[in-house]
Amino acid sequence: MDIFLKISDEPLDVLFCIGLVTQPACGGIDVFIGTVRDATKGKHVLRLEFEAYEAMAIREMRRIAETAFEKWPVQALAIHHRTGVLHPGDIAVIIAVSAAHRDAAFDACRFAIDTLKQTVPIWKKEVFEDGEVWVAAHP
Image (cartoon, rainbow, N blue to C red; front, side):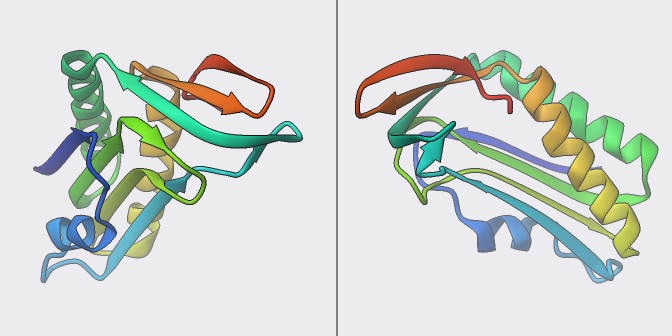
């Protein structure tokens, strides 16, 4: 299993993640890029501040990746998540998955982002023009 996990306060690199999962046996790579929106529930977002319980977050990310390998014939999977202060347009998360065929890559990628939002201990503070609120990094 080729699994690449990262939590960083530095900007994330989409092409680097694609490079991590690119393999000659793979005919499909699916990539999810989660960016910071400029509005939430009709309120203008100035910035987001992400915090993570890093050791547990990496452990949960690994569990997600291993489950994806069990469910689909994927070859490689990368999950990179950002912490710190992010502004609208910044990349908060990248998930890249490669497989011999596109269906497995698509399905595993969707599973990874959906499960990450439900189980990985990453929190965000949304900062608006008129206040701020801490929320789990879930929809």
